[in-house]
Each structure stands twice: as structure tokens, then as C-alpha cells.
Length: 182
Image (cartoon, rainbow, N blue to C red; front, top):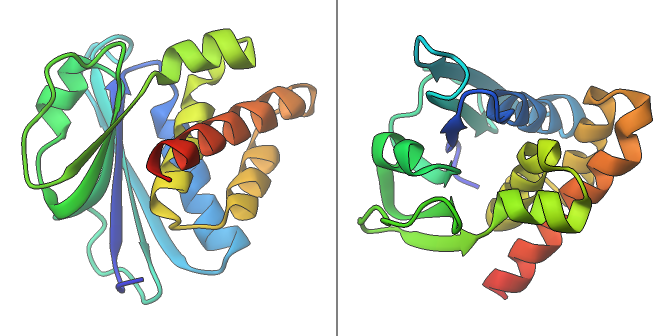
């Protein structure tokens, strides 16, 4: 890993992507002992408007907490793709929800299409865990933390009654994207 790896989760407010970013930062920092920072931004409407969560992971102290050259970006909505799939470095990756992002952003990066929200709804059984499906997908895509560290951070963050649902969501996202990029 280079000393600084930048990820951006983007979608609509209320989709849980800020939580997904926090969980990824916890997987890196608490579980794996790396340096990590998480920041967030969302429009004044909070629910429904475009929002983003950025996570920077490094094996050295992080001197600037904002993403400047994104290695991997997730976009769950067209508005998020239009607004936040910028600044992806050449050779970086963009993961889009293929059901909701119909006009792909163009750039010198690889685009991976995966129906995240419908996978959460139809294969995991609850649309509300789409953020955890997305988290598993991003971990599979980037290998920035181990699969086990990601799952451990998910389990530590969710209420006990929802542990199995969230583990299923995380592992479904992970497996689906691993098979897409194989």
C-alpha cells in the first residue's frame, strides 16, 4: 500500500454511507492498527440530497484529513456520481449502483457496475443494509483492509439483534464484487 489511500462513499442522505465510512475507518484503525481519518459532507436537505463520506487510510500519520486524489469511489445515485465521482486518480476505481447510475462519469479510472440496493433488498432481505453491502463491495474492490477486519468492525458497530443480517449484507457485497473483478 502506498502511504495514503483515499476512498469516497457517495449517495443520497439517509443511505447510511457516512456510517459505512466510519466502519471502514474503524476496521483500519482499531482492528488493523493503521492510521485512518473519516470526514463527511452532505447538503442542507440531509435526507435525500447528495452526501459523501471520505476515508483516508495510511501506514503513516495523516497530515491532511480531506481526500485530494481519490483511489476508490462509490456512487449509489446519479446525483452523487455527477457531483462526487471527480478527483478519482488515474488508474483509480469507481463502483456504481448499476440500477441508479445510468450516465457513467468518464475518466481515466475503471468503473465497476453492481446493483447494490437491489442486492440488499432481494438477496439479503432488507434494503436498509445497502450501506453494509456497499462496504463489503468496497473492501473486496480495494483490499484496503482484510475481509475479516471489515466484518469485525461491522459487528462491533451494529446492534446485536442485527448482527447476522449485517454480516450477511457485508459478505454478500464482498462476494459479489470479488466475482465481478475475478
